[in-house]
Image (tube, rainbow, N blue to C red; front, side):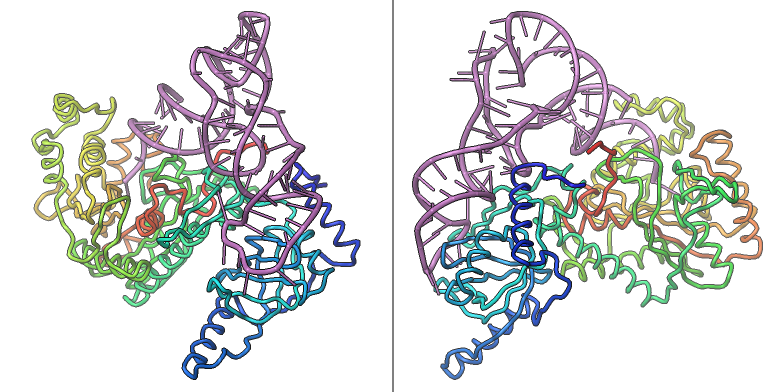
Length: 512
RNA sequence: GGGGGCGUAGCUCAGGUGGCAGAGCAGGAGCCUUUUAAGCUCUUGGCCGCAGGUUCGAGUCCUGCCGCCCUCACCA
């Protein structure tokens, strides 16, 4: 059973007992509300506007509003408070003349910051010009036994807001996200924008004729990306299962099934390091469309992100960590080879094997990993030399075939594939290719990956025989795109850390 | 996993070279019927992350552990 942990909770618990002794239910069932706070303020401002037209006093606006007490300023026989609901914040004024001495005392002594109340009264404007509910009666809706961190704000003369105190420790904010959201409105705003982002992606794809589908998260075989999976087990079926690392192979099977264009928005799971840009579970959108290739995909992605940015922020130009980023199409397109020449000064086609490429990287002062494959070395050049420089949306295209086992080779160059990745603000945001639809080529590429990575590597692609069988029934030529939604939300909300855009980011467990 | 930083009151933070653990806000008592970081007077509140060690004496120095942040590695 809960016990007060400190003096603050002890006092609130005592107030709770006092209220019960007075016959007041601190957690009543029924609530009356005539207006949200935003509606109440709007109704009064409308009445004022109408009155000023006729130069009269505004008509009486009677409201019953509900919300959490976010400032509590008892002043003897007259008290002020602000209450907040999901729509806004309004000041209330409780006067002994209106509510009587007993209720005035109860408001002052037994109600606390962060309690929920219902207040009935008429709208007015104070001398200082703030729209306020002059309270006729009020009622406790829910007692808060634990105090939230207090954040105080003052509006300076110049209109800017000065904040005092606050709730800023990232660990506590993530572990107690409810408290973070309750006291930090800007955090609430992040997740409103996140919802709008997902919604805008969905609307865009729906309008483009894509069908939204859902595919298995628990999979007997994982694939579609090079990542280590989480492993789980179905007791009754006595079957080892993996949490998916991508949607790719299941979505492309649907093109065999004669859907022309499909997409899925959902969670992927990768059993790898966590960082500023990586959470073990993250949200992806992947879409596949028949009869297009990676050049068409670039056009779609440009239009999609310009649309999403506009819907979420009101503009196709955003600010991210001090950078101005412009989503207006068209975006820069550069081949991976040219990008690495430009930013690392190495033409990797001159070093066609891992040994020579590693050697030239060492000459340039880089530190290639010891047992890297050639493809991994190219990828590391991209990650460390190129990626940080790509601030504006940039498509990097035409990747080496041996790090891209699902992408179709270029017609004039079998060492490279029709693939691009999208980089924004120095982050990889999207990945796409002209998909292999030749089942024999695909099988060979799976086997090749197996040879490169070795039988026991978890990063290698397990050969998905059922996927190959599907492809043998005939798969239309198609292009597919995958994008990390969390990273896009980071961009659109100007957050430097993926945890800031996840309601409940993964944290190590801790004894409380 | 490696390197660096951090952990002090409910919250935000101070606490040179080891020497009585502090402030603001929140909380409590009192005054206060147009306040808005309300104000004024008084006041409560501490496992200094945890466990060891050095020392006459440790919030401070050392070691280990836990957690978070940054970074590297890993990661299409």
